[in-house]
Length: 167
Image (tube, rainbow, N blue to C red; front, side, top):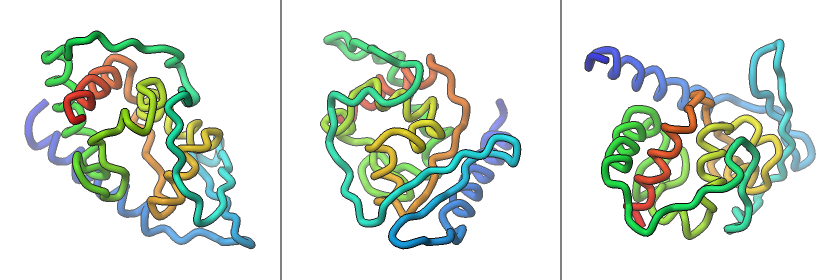
């Protein structure tokens, strides 16, 4: 893919994140309902205000990843691929070492299981609807929805490997 197309995709992703972050939402008695998806496939997510984000290392999230085992050694080629994927798909909303539109990635495995991380990357709509940690992150990060980029398992796995290098 040439640089102009990559730049255009990144700009569109940034624009989409900022639009979502700035959209006003209707509040109802310390609860808020947001709609995710198209008119045909609407999902409502109920959240409460001022919630804290729990650390739940045993939570595997909601999605296709039920179990993952990391080897003792980091697969550097896979991690390099993951870094490039992160830079092309995620930097519009995430920074490695500081809070931005979304949470930082450094130290992610001290707070979340690898399964949860991969399920969040691959299945953010369902996670936001059903997972308590995803709901709390939604609250903490100004009710900003993580865009579903339909990332396949092999790309999510590469990013998960790269996150190991950030510990």
